[in-house]
Length: 310
Image (cartoon, rainbow, N blue to C red; front, side, top):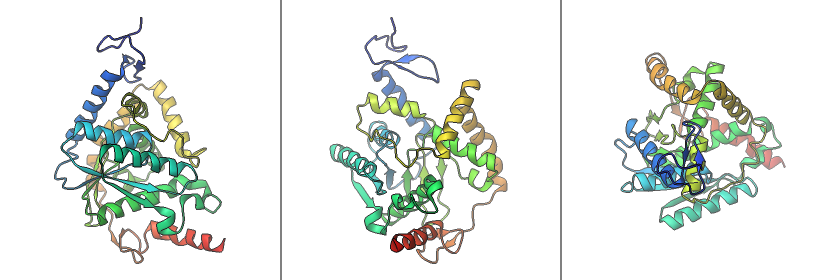
């Protein structure tokens, strides 16, 4: 009879972890997950010198796992949740509703930002335009810019995101293949601030897999937006993640090995030879930018013209 490898219970459900191949029950998995995340945070000194913490929570399983594990593993640390409503029909409203309920039930301060109301356009407005084939890239630019800006303007010095091992390895895989060394150097568990208007970014789930995040929200009975973003279908990101899973079938623990090699072997070299980007104030918004006009403002100007013309 199948039983939990830790407490020996035979009660269902029992999860089989790919990393160990062993069965584990929800109660034991919760302890395993929360301990692993806490150890990751402490190992990389993610909360060192943090005065005011914000969590970026989209409403999906990963970011809600992040929020709940912080409540459990770091009960003395207060944080605020920041949520962006990106204006994707049905999906964005579902995500916002989930986040609002979570914050209400756990007495957490919530900052909501509605892209359509505040900026006059939504991510969905990019579907039929020149950006239709790279919507995930567009969404990434918008989210990175706004999350940092909201955190900065509200006095937060640190922003935690729900990027997990699968997310991180997919990005590393793509950047290394394309030789984008400057960007590779920025992929790390803790991304320190290099400008007064840029808050420190931390990734507490960087060693957790998609599978582990899913088992955690199931075990903790956390309500999350179970539907997938309708704009992600067919994206290169999804194809790369599937490819990485196939590689891991041939090379066990490939994701962990790549992350570990990146952090321990490559980052020390990159820190020595790749200088931080030279930043200036964006001429339109005043936020830090490599160019005269930041990527977000360039994107906004183009989509605003398209929205107005329609």
